[in-house]
Length: 188
Image (cartoon, rainbow, N blue to C red):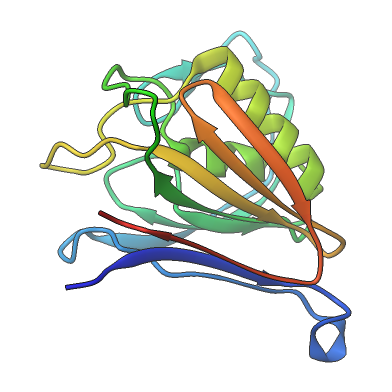
């Protein structure tokens, strides 16, 4: 049967009432438990303490923003979410010419959460994700109880702009989009 993981955004002035419309559907395993969680804003005084993501630890930052996340229950990151500043991020699996790394690093879903917790605009979230990708890489199993690894594409939006970020290993490319944009990535 066909399946896909799709993310879309519509920005003002293409929307009624100058609203931002952001959505994502998922092609995760049918029996995987999905949670919608809220993580409050926080101040982190002990920056020597590392932050445990799904597989690896990363440097902590002094302050993180409040986020609402949709995530597979078994991992730390998220498939999509929004933060207190109206930044929204969703991710999709992508495959390219680079070999998929099975070594544990950051998952694309970890990068979604980190981008939302650490940035108050879409462009800053893009920078957060790219910086973390370059420093820590991406890799590891992306499914519970089944071997499934991939690289990621991200749609990052706020009230004023949206970005598409494509990744493969530590390589990346980003493009700013405006108005209405649909971005589809189909599974194999």
